[in-house]
Length: 276
Image (spheres, one colour):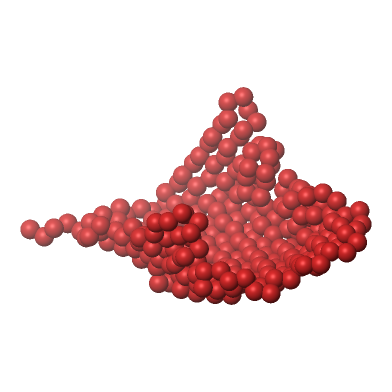
C-alpha cells in the first residue's frame, strides 16, 4: 500500500482463504472535498463450507460449495448517502456445487449478478440456481437508483421462471402511508402436485393432482388504500374471481373482500374413494 497527499493505492497480491484466494486493488482519494473510492476484488475458489464452519465457531456447516466472483465499485461523496447515490459497480458471484445440507430443499449451482450503473440508471439483479433438481432464474429491475432510494413510489419488474412454475410482477411499489402494490401479478403452474413435491411438501398418498393453476391479479395502491381490482383463479376444476380493498386511512382500518366462484368440482381435489 502507498499513500501520498491524501491518496491511497493498495494492492492485494494474493490472500489465501480456505482453499482459494482473494486478489485485487483499491484506490482511495481523500485529497478533495469528497471521498472517492475505486476498488476491484477477485475471489477465486473459496470453500464456502469451511468458511461457514469457521464463522460458526465449529460444528457442522449448513452449506457447502466453492465460491468465485468479482466485485467492482467506484463512487464519491461527502456523506454516506451521497456516496451511495454516486456508487457505480458490479457484483458477479458463482457458487459451484452449492448445497444446503440437512434439509429437503436442495439449492445448487447458485449464480448472482448485480449491476449498479449509476444514480440515474436502472439497477438490475439476475440470479440462477438449481432448486431440488430443477433450474430457476430470477430477474429484477426497476426505476433508477435515485428513485429507489428517495421516492415513495417506484417501478418494479420481477420474474421467476422454472419448468415447474412461472411468476411475475410488473408495476409500482408504494412505501407509505400503507405499503401497497400498484400493478399486475401473474402465476402459472402446470401441475400443483408437482409444485408441492418440488417444494418438499408432496400431496398425501391417494390425493389426486389438482393439475394446472393460473392466477392473475391487478392491484392498485395510493394514499393509505390498497385495492385488489380484479383477480382470476383458474384450475383443472375451479374458476373464481376476487376483489377487495384495505383502507388504513379510517379510524378503524377497513377490509373488504368478495369472491365469486364460477365453477368448482371439489371431487377433483379429494382422495379417490376406496372400492368396495
